[in-house]
Length: 482
Image: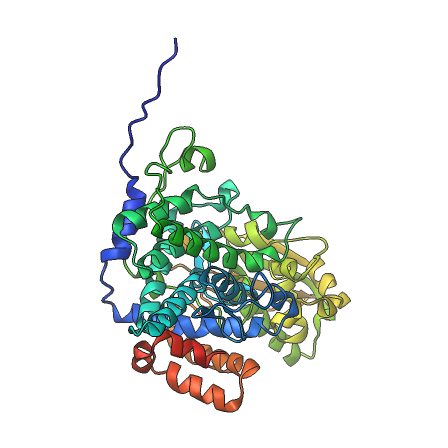
């Protein structure tokens, strides 16, 4: 006996309306969130400027049709490109993420919430230039910081309890979701239009994590976020036309997101949306390395100095024991050949070997000419990795959010150096006082990669002071960066 399926339009999934209402109505009051967003903006753009020194990145940039310049379009910092907001978002998002050096959020799902700045800045700049051309006031940079805080929160709160990587989906799904929501607010979507846009983000095709894992790790992981934030701008603009949404995109039986892509499970939430994620974001300050290895790299730097003080080199090492957390083992514990820079910056053994040998870890250390040094693979073969259950517990503890690693070196002569444990990287909230001056120096270094001394001074004068920056029109801020 056949039964008909009801075609009655269902109510909108609560997950979608909660995001829309947060984006439209939540008031950001916490000063820590605003100040952290300021530092996040500087650091994120600095990461993009450094990426512009890598031809593998710059070959992907520019308009789709070479030579195209969009009147009143968004400009791409560090370049001469002026593009439509969709392509500008791809460009900005790609340079931000290219070197794996921007901020990080670690939970059930991992990710880099500042990836959303691609869509945010492109849209805000385009809107501001269009407004000025029409004799209207532009947006200020405070609107950009506001959108960043909200995008961080959506991506990060969704990630706290919901693991997309465990079902094979890449975390840039959350970039697309968060960017769609905050860009929708920037372009003035009504509540109904914003709900439609968010539903379109969920119904969209989603990236597999294939390009982040053995044996297929590759450079798409460096432009996937640019692709996601760009797609978000497109979806928000589609919703602006009045295009319909899909109210039960998550919960629809058989055809909804939960049944098709999430093994029938509904999303769960640890907390309401606020400003928690920006307040607790993890900055990558010292090393361009996948974040689960940051403390391991710091420990390796300490051990490098100890070896030097003993008159020893890595040739004197017999065994390296790595005590770490479960997420690091799942993502970056690799044996065997490493085929490209993207493969190497997701290998904890490689990221420990470089500082042990050279006393440094830079973006250039993932390139082929460095990787050809035979000492690296010799050291990797001497490494043994094991999970410490307490490290894993502390990693998930919302009051700690540690990313602990511990290294022990055993030398050929039988000497065992004291274990070096680093629980919190310098970019962690618990090390903010220590970290922010280093972050500012990183920003200054990155400005110097692209701009003259005079231009650097102008940018620093306008951007380091929070009050001056937040009052600055978006288009004028971006103009300083091109």
